[in-house]
Length: 292
Image (cartoon, rainbow, N blue to C red; front, top):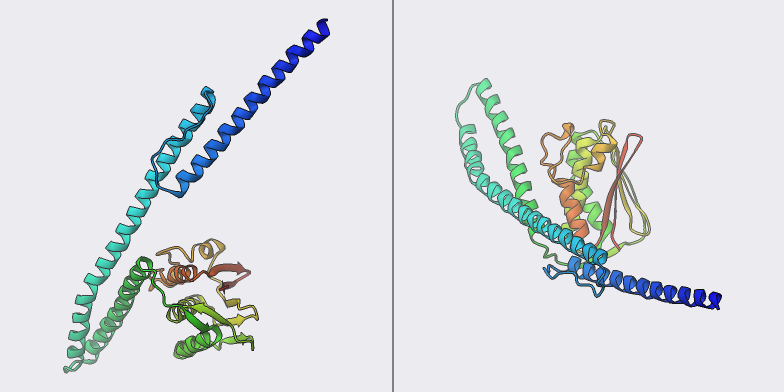
């Protein structure tokens, strides 16, 4: 008789535990569903669970509190990023007007009679003004690109756009005594992209290479459309390479840059559904791009 009683008690205990486990599983599923909803939408609804277990309810309450804090921080980041973009736009816009006036007065000054020393000083001022003007334009373009996502898509011959961009840098390569090593597939690679944005991406990457290169530059395009831009950059480190796509990041050898060139390239690439990455092996910097 006793064994049967023990078996009955154990059966009841097991049944209660099974019910308890099932309730816990249901509560976990409810918490998971609520978390997914909270993360995908900006809602202030509480996480509700059917379980009356105090531990489960405490867990749900704590998760809800952390999600509320996460939403607060996300809104703060979005607002801060928006304010930064607006500030950059306003500052760059405000700088353009006096810079244009300075360039105009410099042109008038160059037409005047000057001593050799004075002319040399004016040339230096004109050179620095042009650099500042270029940096201001880059700031303005970045703020516009990051705020506006309207791109005009069309069928684009990627190889042709790359060739045109390389030709536009012919003078810069000559000035740096660099002979580009170009290896492009004979296959015609066509993608649905914004042609102007693609040219901008290539131009920024090539400009970056000209800043860091030790005297070489190569670009390859495979039959599947993957592009690799490479150059020896012995002054870089793996840590610096990891930050090349960061907004406003520059290294010592690029003092004349805003650090936005590769940031713009990354932004445009991702807007068009592509992927871009940087790799550093030995002393060779490689930037890869691929569009599906």
